Amino acid sequence: MTIPWYYLERPTRVILLRCYYALCACSYPLFVGLNWKSYVPSRAEVNLDSLRHLVLNKAIINFFRF
Image 1 (cartoon, rainbow, N blue to C red):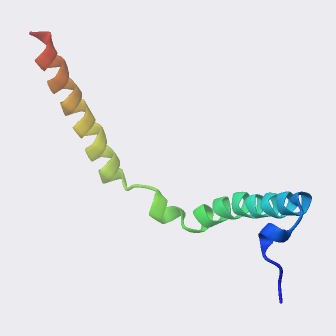
Image 2 (cartoon, rainbow, N blue to C red; image 1 turned 180 degrees about the horizontal axis):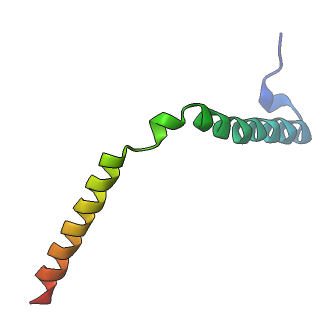
């Protein structure tokens, strides 16, 4: 039978929490590195977004120019 975490003393809880955060901080970059292709947008998506921002910014500038 295990003891619930909230019955542990404070230093033990802090150590366990720091170990958990360290594990998360080390594993996330590894996860991103292994799945890099799904994170990087294609060139067409980047060009479409930049064109969309260009058109919207010109429309907003022209709207407030009058």
